[in-house]
Length: 476
Ligand code: NAD
Image (cartoon, rainbow, N blue to C red; front, top):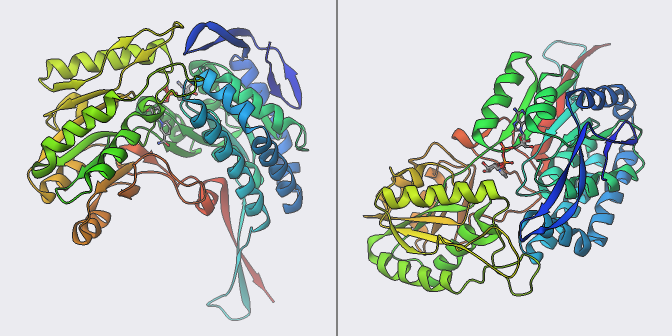
């Protein structure tokens, strides 16, 4: 039984649930505690009580703790990567890559803990000096999704602690294994009791209790648009600080002058790797008429060659869908695409393998129009829609015609079009001749329109959410 970590103690939950491997549903990874609203309250109380002490910690203490966590994650990347892949279903190289990223994030913020600075300015009034400094927000509630069970918690917990906040962390129900392993490492990093708390449990109970708890001064949420809306409403009601990262319907534009192989590789990587379950996945491939037929043909060939299988098998390119519910959602959208008249070029089949799991072959719909539901709503699975465009201007218009704005990509060898696209793509991140999915850990991450709300995550920009600014006027 894996327990919750509250106020420096490992505690049983109100109930427990089994963590199932999506590559093999007979493989139970472990039984994990489920907190209820009362236990979530205990976690908030502990974080609240620990806040003054951690806020007063020295930069060296914070840097040492974060560096220790990062070092252990990197040293154990293979073992933890295996746990991640077993639990979430992405392939083993992807799992190890994600743990490596999480380790690097803790190391980055260990450095940031030492680089906290302010400004000193002369006042417009004689004899007065001004100091602008940053202070911790207080208790930060972290609510995470299941698709990056190590990296997303890392990129929220590391800056929270680096800037002197205390934490209540609620992982997604599907991935308690990574959350527990991360919490166990953090529990040995030398933080005071209560500075970091793990409350595994359901969104409707633990998550909701966190949203309603006035001791939690800021909520950093990543997940679906529907839940994000609820988080924003609850935060607005009690005027809590909030940061939301939500869905995407990311376009990738392919122009006639693109290198076809580069474009196909970018599209396959972005649309299907990690089983298409990435917020930055390219789910709309917008292709200019002159290259359209060749692009569809090469996409079909390349996609058909992908090996779909057990996440831990050597040679698997695409692991299973993460859960039965997610598989049902993908199959529902595949049916919708067919009903809407999109042409299914390949894939979309629920297939069996040696072990019982949620296996789905990557699907390509061609000849789509941007007003179809499969082009407007986030499916969050290995399903890509190819949309024809008359020319660059039309492609840009289609790319921006979405309520989302996370990542936007272009494959082209035209400097003129690339430069124009960089300026006019309505997205937080623009990718040129690289996949839309796959970002660095030391630069800002986030979107605009319906994809994000509040300050950016990661890199030095993380300070915007995890600190509050104070302006001091001193006479004399
Ligand atoms: P989800 O919204 O179902 O759940 C996210 C988290 O919110 C979970 O921990 C869940 O338990 C919690 N939650 C649910 N109801 C709640 C409530 N009433 N109050 C408080 N918390 C509640 O999302 P998911 O299915 O876990 O993740 C997939 C989604 O995440 C996709 O839409 C994807 O695009 C998005 N995502 C976005 C980014 C990004 O950075 N933009 C990154 C990864 C995933």
